[in-house]
Length: 264
Ligand SMILES: C[S@@+](CC[C@H](N)C(=O)[O-])C[C@H]1O[C@@H](n2cnc3c(N)ncnc32)[C@H](O)[C@@H]1O
Image 1 (tube, rainbow, N blue to C red):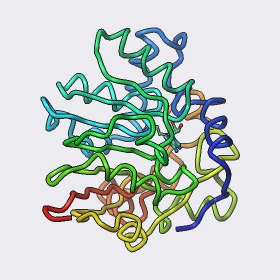
Image 2: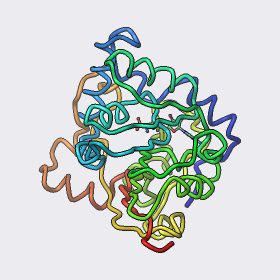
Image 3: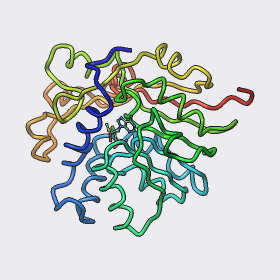
Image 4: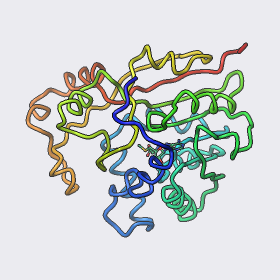
């Protein structure tokens, strides 16, 4: 586990308040229905592994706690699938848009502005069927503390689904060569990266069911920023099956499923 930088929780909060994650995924006025539809279409176009990993329909009628919901793309899909959702987010700006999105689509959830490292001080401790956190734990200054807090919301049979950044990945090579930054907005204050081994260490006390890699970003950035999709030349020439093998070996997203053990 290696931080890109390290910082205080206040710096982390103000970074995500300045530019909530995926805020530029839509071109329509922010907060409109068209905007949220554009955000979702773009997110799942460039990260098609997310709906597969979250498996929204599986959580129908179940209690889902999402940590670091951002502007709520996955959150609203859990709710649409029929889950009872509790959404937690450090950034007030992001949470505001997430709430607005739920209102816009006539859906309900419980919302809390809270730091995962101090979750139980803000969010009532109750067992959930799923604790879900996509791309969040590696952005908090003390990830183990965050995991320990999340474990308080699990009971035997609860699942934890996490996405963490992969140390051994194509994107991390580009970051190390200073050809890319971990996030769309520069100067992300905290972004740890993990190996399968350091994930098992981070999740000690839980039973890790699976860890796999996915997601290489193949798009040319200048065109992508203009909402056009043209792959960089070497990915353009790469046959799809070869690209999928590369994603399995060098993807940026470590997709982790863990369970609360029967006897903890
Ligand atoms: C890369 S974004 C992912 C957002 C969302 N999960 C998604 O996939 O669209 C990281 C999110 O984690 C949130 N975050 C960072 N540290 C946190 C903490 N300590 N507690 C709660 N949320 C946190 C940020 O505010 C930000 O919205």
